[in-house]
Image 1 (tube, rainbow, N blue to C red):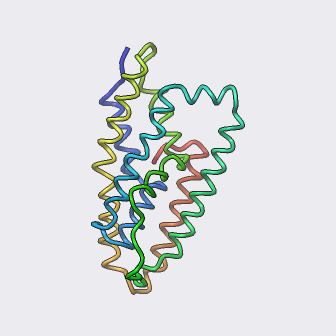
Image 2 (image 1 turned 30 degrees about the vertical axis):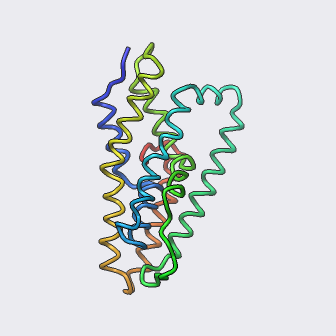
Amino acid sequence: MSVATLPFLAFGASQVATPGPANMALMATGARFGFRASLPFVAGVALGKQLIIWPIGFGLMSLAASAPWAFEILKYASMAYIFWLAWKVANLRLSAADAGTKAPGFFAGLWVHPLNPKAWAMITQGFTNFVSEGTPTLQATATIAICLLACQLVFHPMWALGGDRIAKTVAGTAAERYLMWILAGLTVASVLFALLGGEST
């Protein structure tokens, strides 16, 4: 009765480190506002996943059997949010930064994962594939929560830093527009992939 911690850590790292809506948002924020200014947003994104880990761990998924329509609504609301986010990213211009524009903060970051269908899919798979039957709910949920937070604290800042470094290279050039559209396209593709059975976050 336990959680396969090391295998789950490897799984979590592989998912958190790969492209997805959250990482695209982090890269775009780092590109637009710089690494240092994006750190509150990074912290919000990392902690926001906890808002769905604990409810899932304590039985939210059982609601799917009794009220599947609720999860259908959640799925389409999440898709709409991520597509809107992708549109915003596509129309960002790194070279047109306004001194009065502020980077999204901690509370904006909190909502990225709860509205990210890929995060829901990954966490659900963590509970179903890496937790043995009979494991106490608190132990299982705490282990998954800690493992994912550790992975996020390593990889999420890297995406923001990567955006910052890329921006310094392409801002004001012809490549800038294509970069932002590519990021937006990857964001949309990652959501569609998750809804078709993918697992990255």
